[in-house]
Length: 193
Image (cartoon, rainbow, N blue to C red; front, side):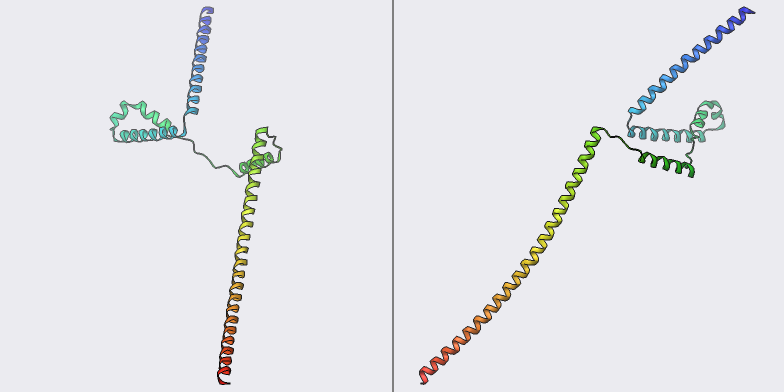
């Protein structure tokens, strides 16, 4: 009996060590696949999903078209399809969870955040850039106002000049007419007298 129990104990230990070795290998392969997945770009992932969905659709069509005899021969692939199809649906967050999340965000905002030197420099540069943009915008606004005011002033001075010139012309015409009348009168006086 002792021999049998020793053999059983050894066989159990061997089985356990094998299982441990297998689980380590599985963990390693999972880690590798995770690392590979991280390196892949989003486009690659999307393309793979599309191709998988296409192949699944094809497999589904084929399985529907097959007769019951064919499905009994290849029972294993259908089981794999059944395993892949059920996906857990995302449930919307409950009201309590939303409130807790919002409260946690507010508390995180209340806490002081310590910035690195680079972050402070970046924030300072951004702040300075905004100030410069505001100053330029203010200067541009002032410049436009000045230009509009100058146009108004120029138009008013031009209109004054035109009025003066017109007045001067009318005055000159009157004077010219008076001079002509005086000349005519002087000629008449000279000849008639």
